[in-house]
Image 1 (tube, rainbow, N blue to C red):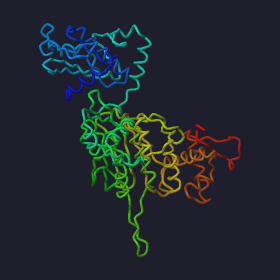
Image 2 (image 1 turned 45 degrees about the vertical axis):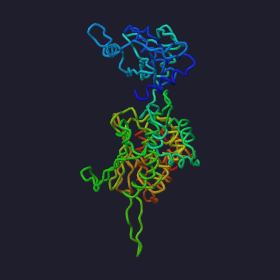
Image 3 (image 1 turned 90 degrees about the horizontal axis):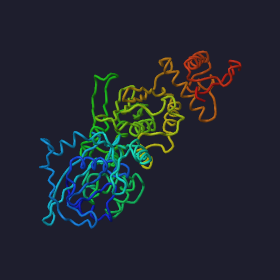
Length: 482
């Protein structure tokens, strides 16, 4: 453990033992009792929102003076087994623990650091323990406490876990894009380091450790890292952008791996996508660059992929693939809501802290209206509706460039019809043959063709008539969920 003496001195400043800190002079050496304490302290750390719990030998439990210990975890044997392997075999696998020792003023202190329980309770020899004040108790005897602990475990939060620990103030400033944070929040840049750290702690970008140093959370690193490669556990969550010269995947011309955090590198990413999706049009003597996709569509789709990804899936991050006729944006994790309800549903995210800060940074929409804007842009620019494909552990959104109406498949026409109905419904309106023709920018000659699309959309349960008894020429429709 780094900064061990600082940690001990910080813990000694506590007014008394806590549910996650236990001091022992020299009396605790029984391996079974040590295992029970590890279990109890780790569960208590979760219950009290602490990343670690501590068991210290050589500290007086009342005065917190350093009195020294003879306990030697290196030499401790249980039969033929060493202490640490013996404990590891009998403890559940949802946490880690670490012994260390140090000599302070010629007196030995042993520190056992215990990670908090994650996903489920820590068990020792098939029993669960918890600390109430400074007393170790069986968890099954405390049903109300057990319920509270499980509530904490169910809300396990990848964003709040440390991505890099034991950092000085200077380390934090060097690793994170502090200027970008204050620029995005439209706050004047503080003149003092402690003020910068204050904002970061408030937004859970960093946390102050028990030894007085700092940890950068996964949230802080993902959003504001100057270089994600400085955070090895997160480097695979960097955004990857692949550009293809043809419509298939055998023609990649460029392959970018994002170096910066999602917030610090967002504008640069969007600019790169815009450059790769623009084409030059010659009008008379003038050359004009025209983008195949409205910027708002690109921004909102990329932001949604970042916010709604399942961060618990290891070894996988957001992927953006640019083809001559489409952009495919894939993120780890299946959607939390039905893909047909993206437009009307209130915002819901696996990563609430990430989503909240992205909204404060004005990178995504506050009220979940991003999909509304994407749909409206598709209609206004006469683009096909985005396609959403769900796999076991991934979700892919495809943005299509312009396709003439006659080249659209029936499925693409039905998707556009359904999205048109959703937009109308949000405006307290319904669709008709006429409004759908207007959406496709078609004249009256296509009336019968549009009727076929509407009938197919009804048959496939995408839309339904407002009043089935209305005369055909006056029929109006709304989404199936309307």
